[in-house]
Length: 269
Ligand code: NAP
Image (cartoon, rainbow, N blue to C red; front, side):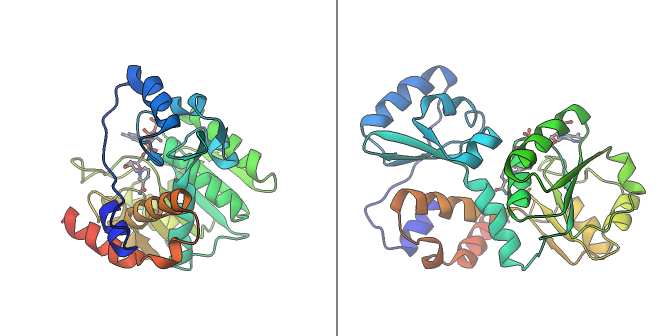
């Protein structure tokens, strides 16, 4: 994906590579990064939280979420960001999913749910209902939203309660890993819930991109969702926003995200 971005931008001498880093080497890696080697770094599971203490500055959203996935080095200072928030907002914008002043439903309360919650808070939604298997974790999501936008109402729900919830949602997002390869027949919701929450044409977004068409998206489609989108655009957009942070300037409008998405989709088929 990154090679394709650099090809599009004609940045022939830019390289990007994956490094597998055990936890015990995290500190020494970042000491080296501070003084050279790379201009920027993406961080993924399981280091998104631990890395924060190794940075000089952390963007407010990343701090509130408690997870950094993109780091920029400038004058030997390391600054952390979370581009998942921008990636999710990009999906909303691309598909004209208007959530401002509307009620939305967030299924799941893990790391990615925090990024989606932050995006919703920034979009000035009226309320976020959070449904998670482990109800204790809902408090973390409520806290993220409260830090970013005090006007947004939050409600906790059991997954089972969604079968009879009365709220008319504008957007429903699956942030759980249920339905991800190899357990592709699974969904975090029942068909009864799908018929209830999508009957008013709510937009459905599943952050999962493998498979491209999850059971959750199939349920949303048959229940009449306005649109049913997988997580591949968010994945592409968070990468492009990382490049924008590293390169500066307006990279996002100079990249053909649709072409990148199609290319990546082909690699998943
Ligand atoms: P995470 O922090 O581990 O959270 C996992 C979530 O799934 C939790 O809410 C967990 O509930 C729930 N869950 C797991 N197994 C379940 C089950 N059997 N029944 C009900 N709920 C279950 O993971 P994450 O980082 O948020 O990632 C979640 C998904 O989002 C993954 O598929 C990941 O690939 C995808 N993702 C996509 C993008 C993108 O760019 N498109 C970005 C980030 C993540 P409990 O709290 O009860 O355990």
